Amino acid sequence: MILDIGCGNGLQTMLFGKKCKRVIGIDISKKAVASAEIRSAFLNRRINSEIRRVKLENAEFGTEYFDKIFSICVIEHISNYVQILKEVYRILKREGHMIFSVDALETIEDNKLVEKHRREHHVKKYFKIDELKIILQKTGFKRISIYPLFKSDLARKIFIKGINNRFQYGFIHSILLYAFLRCQEYKCTSKKGIFLIVKCCK
View: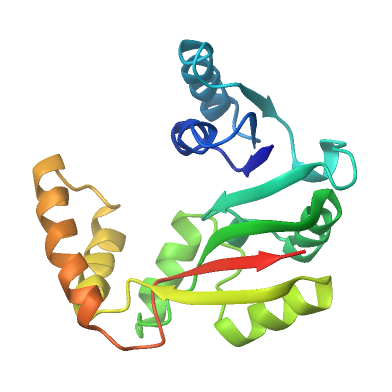
C-alpha cells in the first residue's frame, strides 16, 4: 500500500501504482483532484488507485497503514510540516519508507529571486540538509539519507531563468536541457542543490 501526498494531477500516483497492489493519492486542490480522478478512472483496470481531496491530518488513516509514502515537492508548501511528518510516521508501517523531495534553492544567491519564487509558488520553508535531518530524527525516523539535486551551475542558471519566466519551456527544449543537465549533474560534486531528495525509514 502506497500513499502519495500532494498527488496533483495523479501522474506520479499512477506510476507508483504500477509497482504496488494499491495506491492512494491525496491533494487539497479541487482542480488537481478532478484531473487525478479522471486518470485514475481511465487506468482503473490496470492500477488499483484511489484519489481523495483531503489534508493528510484530516484523512484519518489507521496507524501503521502504509508500506511506503511519497511526496514530491509538497512539504515546503505546508506551514505545519513538523506535524505532517509526525502524522506520516504514525501511519507508516514499521520498517516502512518515506521518500520525498523539498525545495532548498541553496545555489541561488540572489535573495530577491528567492523571494520571488517563494511568493509566486507559495513556499513556506526552504530546507537545508542538516536541519532536515535533525527534524526527521526527532520525529523518530532512522536510516536517513538526504541528497542534493540540481547541483550544477547549469541547473542554477536554468532555474533562475525559470523563476523569471514562470518555468515556461517548450517540450523539445526541455528534452534537450534534460539530456545536457544529466551530464552536468553527474560531474558536479557540490553538496548544495535546488532540491533535496530524502529517504528515511520508520
